[in-house]
Image (cartoon, rainbow, N blue to C red):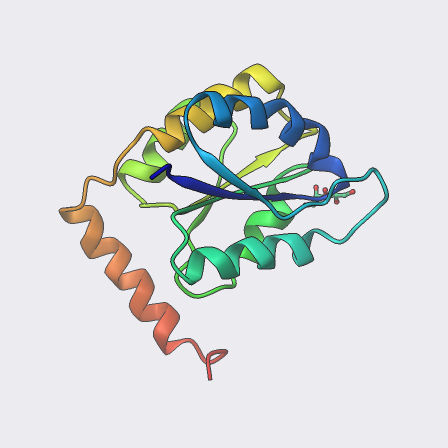
Length: 152
Ligand code: RB5
């Protein structure tokens, strides 16, 4: 079965998403596209939280695109179990998976071009979590999330 990426964007991430979708298909990934599909202004948290919710429920990986990727990453990281990484270089994309076991990649459509974005996405999707000492660190984050006063 094809591995799946759940994708969403706001108006500022639409063009970059359209640039990247063919690559995901070419690399054999199934894509579930939660929008938006138009140029009208929308609110990025609606899309970030939709993807984050799916990832928290067990979908393998999410991809979020907005103008900078910052708003998407802030919003997605509010959802327990989500580790969203904003990346603008390939080393960070590799490390986000290998060290941080990131399950959502955030990209800024107004910050990076399509070719760099493609390489960042490729690095992210092709890298496995290394575990070991990195798992201990993620466990500390998970415990902090669990103990957060904001959690019911
Ligand atoms: C939309 O103008 C812009 O604020 C949004 O795409 C994103 O960059 C927020 O972080």
